[in-house]
Image (cartoon, rainbow, N blue to C red; front, side, top):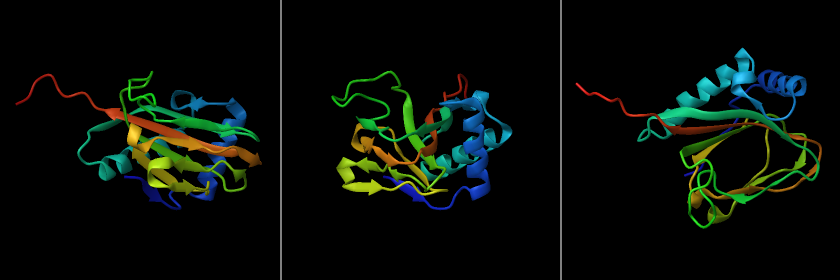
Length: 163
C-alpha cells in the first residue's frame, strides 16, 4: 500500500523547511529543527495513524535532507536488508516522505514491486510500509537539488498494565 497525498504542504511551509535546512546543514533532525518542523512531524503522525489504523504509531526519526546532482539512494527497504534479515532500523513500520520542491530533474522514487516511479513534486506526501515488499530506490538527481522531509514511524509500546 503506497499512499500518495498531493499538496499537503503549502509552498510557504516548504520554503521555510528548505531555509531551515540551509541554516543548519545536511540531515536536520527534528530535535534540531524549528517549531514548524515539529508541527509538520506531528501532522504527519496524525495522518499516518489514520492511514494505518491497525498500528499504534509514534515518530522514530524525522529529518530534512537534500540530494544534489548525482545524489541517489540505492535500492533498499527501510526496516530490513534486501535478504530479509534485520538492518540497523528494524523497528520502522511506516515511512513518510514530504517533497519540498519540484525544481529538480531526476530524484524520482521507484518501487520495483509496484512498477511505480514518482517524480518529486512540491507539497507531495508519500506514505508506505517500511518493509521488504516496499523496497525502493531514489534515482540520481540530474539537475538542481532535491529537498525532502523524511519521517519514520515505529509501533508505540503497549502499556505495562491494562484495566
